[in-house]
Image (cartoon, rainbow, N blue to C red; front, side):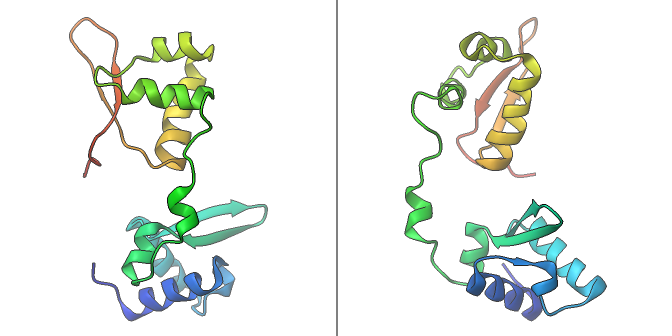
Amino acid sequence: MKLTDTQTNTLQLIHGNGHLTAQDIPLRGGARKKVLESLIKRGLLRAKTCKNWINYSLTPEGRQAIGVEQPEADEKKPVTRPGSKLHRVIELLSRSEGTTIAKIMAETGWQQHTVRGTLAGTIKKRLGLTITSEKPEGKDRIYRIAEEPVTA
């Protein structure tokens, strides 16, 4: 992955500090916005809104792009608490036959909008898992966690 000097310097600065706000990055105006947006779009930075500002931190791909190893603590962090509803949802999605929204609702006691929010927000965005779906003729839509990441 080819990075500009400014992009590399920005990633190194954020790595050295753990996380930064946009004001901590020594670029101004449109240049800062353009660099941050390009790094987020490429999956090298993560932006997290905190009250009145946004914190930027490196993703594992961002650490790889500048040649630093991912901290050991991140590699061993459990994805979900065993026995939790979220853990059960991931188990259902991991089965070869997949699962439906109705089955997740029956298993967890959640309403449909909660299941959809969990799939889109927690599982896709927070955990970074790729969910695929298919609609067999005359049946409910089936959801699965993809074996390999789906590329656009």
